[in-house]
Each structure stands twice: as structure tokens, then as C-alpha cells.
View 1 (tube, helix red, strand yellow):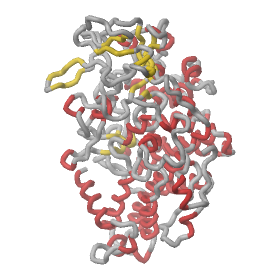
View 2 (view 1 turned 120 degrees about the vertical axis):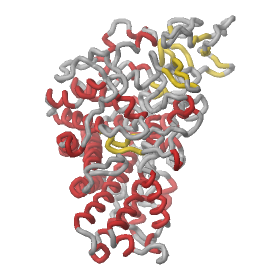
View 3 (view 1 turned 60 degrees about the vertical axis):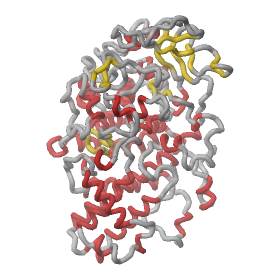
Length: 612
């Protein structure tokens, strides 16, 4: 991995500058770059700069339905997000999945890719390179062009399709937006080429694009587009939805059907209580399941910020899970937790027991411990950080050493086998083709890893009313409901949720109440992890004397002279709530972001998205 970063530095120097045609001849020439396999290899490494930073993946989920946070996202506050204020905001980066340097209406990487494709296709430059080698590198370039355009279409819908490097005098610099169907057909063509021509079938470092990463990405793109077309009937593209869903299922099945060659499976090496989380905390990618990752390198100061973001009371947006989402985790026997009588008033220490074991690997609970100066210490949710009580640990290392700044050394997955299984299951379910055998191979396999004992081999036949009431009232199919439950739990904090809601046409869920643990009464401390130490109490008038070591949280109506954002739902008891004082709203125009007005001033042929 270290070598890869040095190569990226080298290629940046080799190919630096906006106009590759004007590189100094004593630095590089077209012939030296495109006339040898090594030149193509070095150039292709520059495409990896488009991928997200280590922090980009989990930061992308900071605008979701299951995340409470420090403040209401500007995107969801009426009048706070406009075409003139979107260019460089953190909100914009979060909601665009924070993937790569060309998030938002930025096009820099596209010229780099198109320049490579045009010149790599020139027989006068590549005559000495074997055809399969040349096609391999063209496949990589087209993979990244598909990546570039997929991010653009997710965010803006219709965008200009450009498949050549533009010069300053090119008329296409002011090209209008092309129809979504044309752009996505072009993306699919690029992905098909990549899948057919990328030669690499295995990469021990798990840091490079391989044939199977291309198939995994194709399944992701085609699932998105198929479901988007199905549920967004206003596009007039519903008739083609099943074609895309079939492509998604077929691409996922390629990875699933060739385990000996692809080398991927659901990782279970650390047991039901540790396997899931190890995928996200291991320094080197867990090779069984991780297909491609962003790998950290301490010697190059390539690190990320998970501990800093998810433990600090002053850094980041203080992501917390909400209780409505935590309620979707099944009981260990595979039945809904929300079928349990009295679940609404269960205390935190009790509600997290005997649940899907991914819960204990996703939030602080139970006997969770962290190293502090080399000593393992019981660590309940910290109300110096959390607003709801459901504090994430999925990406965090269990040592306070990493909490103070960007110090995380654990790798960050970009593609993993678990997602491929979910893509296959959802595509087949949307097509009406999912069998019991498919269920066992996908959802059943993931739930087995999570320690769940029931419902692993046959599809569900009854819809969970909690899911239809709180999430998807338009979905009656119990199989689709359960796959959506599974996708939310398995892939939480991996950068998928915002655009899952967009493709399912359920953006309104982003306005869900930010609710937290149940508090039966004021002034009574709770032992959140049952270690014999009282942790937190909620008050409206500070009690005296206070219990030593307890964190006291003010839930009075006013904090000073201002409305208190942290309250109890029934004033003196009930679920903890956060930021109900600031309304969040959703309108259908928000399924697309506005094109920044500054870009429309430069290209008057760009028509703004409706409603903006």
C-alpha cells in the first residue's frame, strides 16, 4: 500500500497540470506515457484520487434517517440551502456521499479520464502494447468514468455526457444536460467494458480495482438505477426498471458464483460477537469479505478520523443513532424486537439484550470496554458526546489514544461481499424472483454471522407492521421490507443510506424525529451497562446533592432563555428527544440537488432542477 501512495505522488508530478497536451517534453511525452505498459499503469493510478478519503465513507451517513446530530442539516431546513450556497459546504459533501474530489458540480477528473481513453485507443501511440493489456487499462479508465458519472447522476439527475477531453475552445464546454437515460446507458456500457476487459482477478492488497470489484460496482449502479426508475414513476422510465434490476442481479451473481476465483465470502472468523465489527476495525482489510478498501499508512500520515468524530464532544457533527432505527434490530431468535410487550418503555440496559449481535458491534452497550492508558475499562455511552444514548463504535478503535485527532489506522472498506449479497437479494426481490435458496444464501448468511437463529432458510411471509408504520407504508411485500431492514442494519455508516432513501422515494424519512433512550423519571441515575456504576441522570432542576460520577443532563423546557433542544417526550418522562425545536422539512424537489448558480452563469444552457 505504501508503494501505491508513492506511485500516486509520482504520477501527479508526471501528469500534473490541467492541460496534459502542454507537458514539458523533458518531463513526459505522450509516447513515453501511452507507448508502454508501465506508462499506462502509472497513469491509471491517478484515477484512484477520485475515491473517497478514509473519513469520507462514514461521514456520508451524517445526513440519514437514522442519525441525530449536533444541528439540523441545512439541506433539510427550509430556506437554508439554495443554488447560491451549495458549492463548497460540508452539507453538500456529506449528502453527496463524500466520494472523491469531484463531488458536486466539479468535472476535473473527467478530463483526465477522457484524455487517457482517447490516447490509449490511439493505435499510433499504443502499437507496441498487447491488445489485452491496452483493453485492461481502458477497462480501468471506464470503471472510473462510470464512477464519476454515477455520482453526478445520483446528485443531479440529468447531466451533460462528455466522452472526450475538452479544450478551451470546445463548444461542448457549454453543452446542455443530456437525458438521464442516455447518460446511464453510457455508464452501463462503460461498466460492461470494464467487467469484460479488466484482467486482474485478485489483489492481495485489497486496494486496487479488479474484475470482481467492477462486477460489484455494476451491481450497485444497476440496483440504484432500477429501483430509482421503478419508484420514481414521474421519470417515465418504469418500463426499463426490470432490465436494470436484472443486470444488477446478474452482476452480483458473477461474484457469488465464483468463490474460488474471486476469493470472497462472508467473514466469520471472529465468531458471532466479533466478526462483523472486525471488518471495520482491522488495520489490514479482512480479505475474506473486503473486495476493495482505502488503506491507512501511518508512515505516510494517511489516516482517518473515526475515533475523533464519534467520541469527541467538540469535533464533527456528533452522529448518534435514533431509537426508531435501533428498534429495527431483530431479537436473537429472528423475531421483531417490536413484538415484545412493553418495548416502548424498556430501559437501555434491557432493550439491548438478546438482540442481533451486530447491535453490540455497532453501538456502546453491555460489556463494551476500551483501553485507557493500557487498562481495559467498562465504557457506557458517553453523554458528553451522545444526544440519544446510542453512540456508534462501528469504525472506532477501542483505545482512547485514537480519540484526539485524525489517528485512525483501520482500513475503510469501499466494496465488500456483504453488499453484493444485499444487492442480489434486493434486485431479485424487486423482480419477484427471490427463492428460499436465494434468501438463505444472502440474508440468511448475513444473519447467521450476526448470531440470529431463526428465519434463516425461508423467506418471510408476514410484513412487520413496525416497518410499514414507521418506514415504508407503500411496501406490502414482506420480503422487500426485510431486505430493506437488513440493508439498513448491515450497511449502516458505510455511505449508502441517503441514496437508498432517494432511490426508494422516501426522502421524507430524513425528517424523522430524533429520539433516544427511554427515561422513566427525572433525577434518577441509570446504570447503562450494568457494571454497578451509575452513569447518567436527567433533571429539570439540578438535584442536590449530586451523585458522584454521574453525568447530569438538563431536560427543562428552557436552557437559559432559549428553548432546550434536549427534552423528554412527556416532559418529565419518556423517550429522550433532540432538536425538536428546529423543524426539518422535505419536498420532492430535494430528490435532486440544485446546480450551483455560479456554474449556470458560466453555462447558460444548463437548466436548473425543478423547484430550485
